[in-house]
Amino acid sequence: MATVLGIVRALRGENPKTGEAVPGYDRDVGTTRTGARIYRAHADSERYEIDFAPDFTSQGWAQFDTDQDAHYFGVWVNWAQMRTLTYAEGDWSLVECENREQYLAEVRGMIEFYGAGRVARCIGDDGSVVDVVQDRSHFLRGPGETPTIGDVLRAIGGGQS
Image (cartoon, rainbow, N blue to C red; front, side):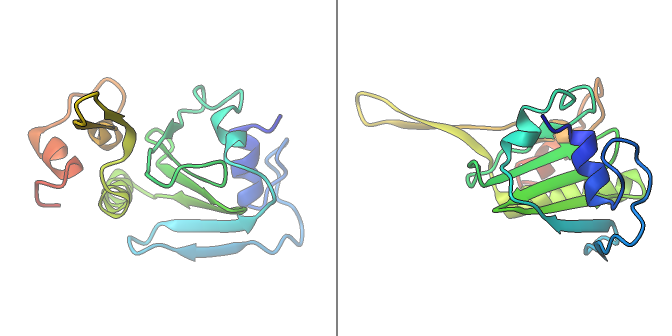
């Protein structure tokens, strides 16, 4: 089974097991709108390689729910490593931020782009509908930190960035 660390290393052009640079590896590296480095690669796989990787939690990754989530699409964030990871139909994108402000700008952009992050839709016997959405405010703070009201408002789209 693949590990998240191994997938991240491969995207960076490193040996998945040792982390050493792979000579002659032609990786696709660019920058995002915030200036963060983005690594791209294609590999026939599926999102569950991340979701069920044995080091998913220990490496600090969390699923970023979208209404597009499926075996062929997924998004994850890592506060401690200031990274985001996206998988779409075989295309992997790893974004590495240089500082906390850049990471927060990336995550805020994801919140804006992907919307509410519906986890489930419940329909009652009377036809009432309740959407259950992911609390995105925890992606804007570190583990154990209390969100500011500004973080919460920005996470739900009600505040200034």
